[in-house]
Length: 128
Image (cartoon, rainbow, N blue to C red; front, side):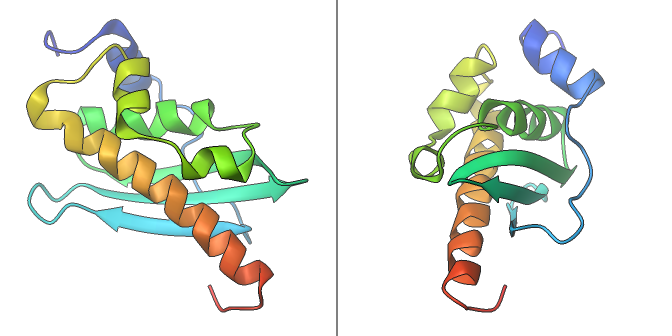
């Protein structure tokens, strides 16, 4: 794990917000067919803001770390801000990722934006 920042190692060894929200307001699952990483994110929303995030990730240490970090990062954010979340924000916030692991930050951002999209579909009366 020498190629990773202390923050990546910390989020891998002590992941935050792992698990699943029962009856979430929004959810999404994303995967990378090349490496096999898979992330599932569930969110709770109140007053237009993300108030809780839980995740389940199967993958490499950076995949777990990006899930954990991103779940803390977006808590309290308005939904519109989550829509703008980038892989760079996640990777930079973690102190960087090796080039071959940047896809982990892409998955985390995609999963969170997907969960917000699912929340909006449900609000319009669409099925999850």
